[in-house]
Image (tube, rainbow, N blue to C red; front, side, top):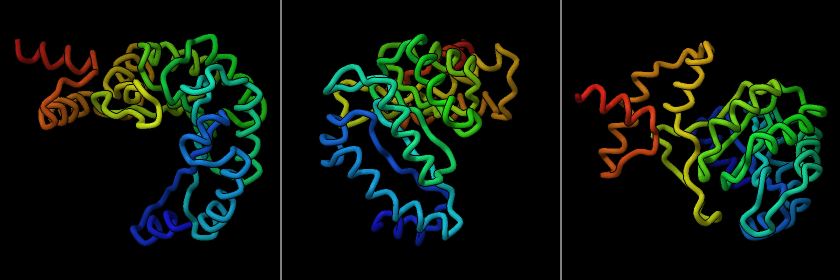
Amino acid sequence: MKGFEGALAAGADEIVIFGAASEAFSQKNINCSIAESIARFEPVVQAAREAGIRVRGSISCALGCPYQGDVPVESVVDVAQRYLAMQVDEIDVADTIGVGTPQRVRDVMTAVTRVVDPARVSGHFHDTYGQALANILAALETGISIFHTSVAGLGGCPYAKGATGNVATEDVLYMLRGLDIDTGVDFDAVVDIGQWMSAHLNRKGSSRAGNAIAAKRAA
């Protein structure tokens, strides 16, 4: 509630609650069980709804956990159903450590969308093992059309050793453009931003498409 009150004071129009599909990750990340974390979220979601603020419910480690390994599909569906009962607006299925593969993504997304409208489900893929683009394509095939990305692929997770950032925005836009999917996002502007951010951080961004376009421009 303290965090919510701060978000409300700052004028936020959307909040996110983070629950894990893995008991081990829940304990390591927020020091409580999945059930306890959901109970903590209930008054926050209620307060947000009363304030007219949109709520997303993120399911961490939906495709694998750094502590327990495999995560049962049933566990992901269980958290999704708990979120539904709280009336969250959108449910994020997150591959927090980037271990997911296309078939696993199809299995999880198919199971989740049996109980949740696909229009309310999003995919959150880290690219640790280089599978994020393939996983997005697999999720698209199950009817998912909302995806989280990170410009230049920046980011990570302090509680998931070795996890890289979300899949690079530039790479996703390049793939979607190749599929004739209009996102309404200015690809060239995102490449510019990614290159600027990477230069500012004195490191090379992980977007292959962004780096390739930048190299082509410089040639």
